Amino acid sequence: MFAVSPRTASVVLAASLAVTPLALPASASAAAKPCLLGKWKLTKYSMNAKGPGSKATSWGGQGVRLTVAEKSVTYDFGGSKPIIVKGFSDGEKYDMKTTYRKRLTLKSTLKGAKKGTLALKPKSAKGDARAALVMNGAPFITYSVAKVYREGSWEPVAPTRARYTCTAKTARFKMTETDESGTGTVVLDYRRL
Image 1: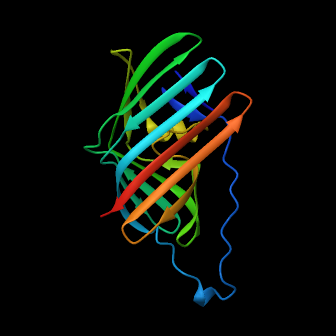
Image 2: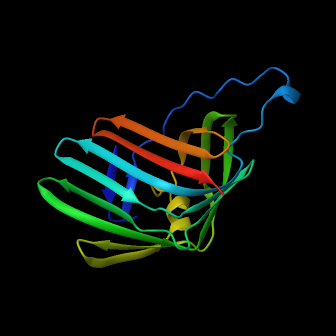
C-alpha cells in the first residue's frame, strides 16, 4: 500500500505492480507503434490509499510535462502545480504539499500499443529535479528527486510501473497495489502536446 515516508517525503509504494504485457502481432513489421510515444502534459492526478487506521487522498500536479521515448522518459516539472496530500494515520490528521521543479530522466521499458505498461528503471534516474515538502503548513524538507529513485523509492507523480491506455490525444496511467497494509491507487491523465 502507499505509505507516508518522511525519508522521501512522499507517498510511496510498498511493492511493484505486477502487470501482464499486451500480446503483439506475430510479425514485427505489422506491430503497431505505441501511441504513448511523444510529448504529454498532466491534466489530472489523483491518489487514494486506505488501510487499517490510515487513509490518504492526493491531487494536483497539473502542468507536469512528460516526454516518452522508446527507451526513456523525461519529466519536466517547471511551472507545474504542487501535489497536495491530506490524510490521517493512527488517529493523527496531516496535510502535505510537495512542489516539484526542474527535470528528471529515467531509462524505461514500454510494452503495448494502445494499452500496455510503462516501467521505469529507478537506478538510471538523473537530472536536477528537486522537491520541496511542506508538512502541516511548515517547510519540512527539500530533496533530489533522482536520488529518491536511485535509492529504491519513487514519487507518485511518476510511478515506477503503471498500466496505460492512450489515444492520439490522451493518455491515462494507473497503478494499484494491495497488500497486508491496505490498498492504494494512483491515476494520472495526460493530454498530448
